Image 1 (cartoon, rainbow, N blue to C red):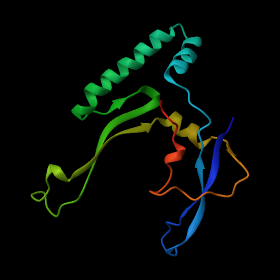
Image 2 (image 1 turned 135 degrees about the horizontal axis):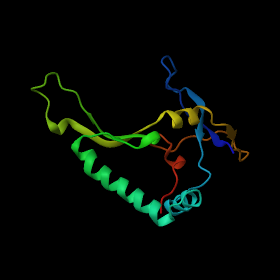
Image 3 (image 1 turned 135 degrees about the vertical axis):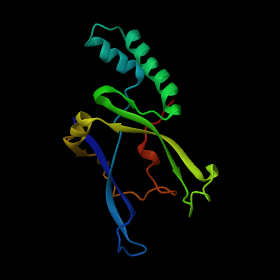
Image 4 (image 1 turned 180 degrees about the horizontal axis):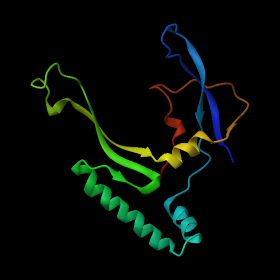
Length: 151
């Protein structure tokens, strides 16, 4: 199985691009969703744990994340990688000029481990075609339609 992609027409963001320049880019297309229950069943089928045991461990990981991330700690998830809280802010000329109100983004960052990085490097790709030409992204920068719908 290969990672599917489709082509979209987007603004050319390269250094010396013309103001109205556009280029065709590849964006990945999801072929479906593996939900938590399905993942627990798959893991249970290849281990001595039940699906309920696996779900219990996942819930435990969430509990640890809720406890440790607000404390500023990075949480290692074995060979999966690391999860940490990160901040983004506006800049100030001096430390004295900086206020906490200048912090604009708070988010959770996942950094994959070596095995996942290697896996991504080796993904096979396959173009998803619907017979259409590259599409123009929706207003607001595009990319929103590439994310799976979560119900």
